[in-house]
Image (cartoon, rainbow, N blue to C red):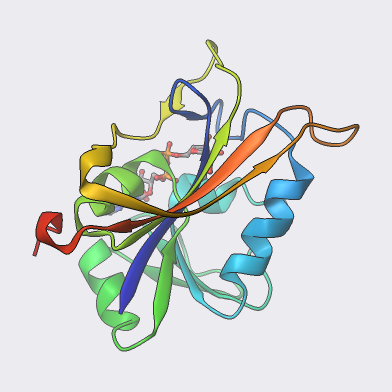
Length: 168
Ligand SMILES: NC(=O)c1ccc[n+]([C@@H]2O[C@H](COP(=O)([O-])OP(=O)(O)OC[C@H]3O[C@@H](n4cnc5c(N)ncnc54)[C@H](OP(=O)(O)O)[C@@H]3O)[C@@H](O)[C@H]2O)c1
């Protein structure tokens, strides 16, 4: 199984504020949907609660939480280990946030889908962990210019882990 992290982050590694995102970038959300559809997505409780319509369609929604009660369209596991056990054997599984889950899974991840938003967000309260880019090989990069619907330029880079650096 390939474990992939997918995230949009500011120039300062910011990812959220007050339980929500820091930007409205419909183009990036569309690419997120295209990338994750048909796969399992694993998220923390706060990220799940931030989804305006609950579970995301056409994906197996998995929440890691010790306190979330059973929800329509969602599997809840009390530990990351149990969640990963449940998706064993799948081809590619996505960790979609938030900071807590990114922090725990980054050392074990095989691939990163990293959208870099070309601004800093000083009022952020949630950050992606530091990435040691010497451990990662960029495979593909696309720049998306800002436009009337997307307020910031973004750069999507897909990185594959150099296997030597993967934590077993
Ligand atoms: N920019 C992006 O791409 C992106 C993506 C996702 C989220 N976000 C933002 O990130 C923020 C949320 O992140 P967050 O770090 O505050 O919360 P989070 O990781 O979404 O949720 C934290 C909660 O999930 C459960 N949890 C997480 N990891 C766990 C683990 N390893 N084992 C057991 N339980 C675990 C715990 O719930 P219990 O207390 O119930 O056990 C924990 O309190 C929001 O602002 C959101 O909008 C941004």
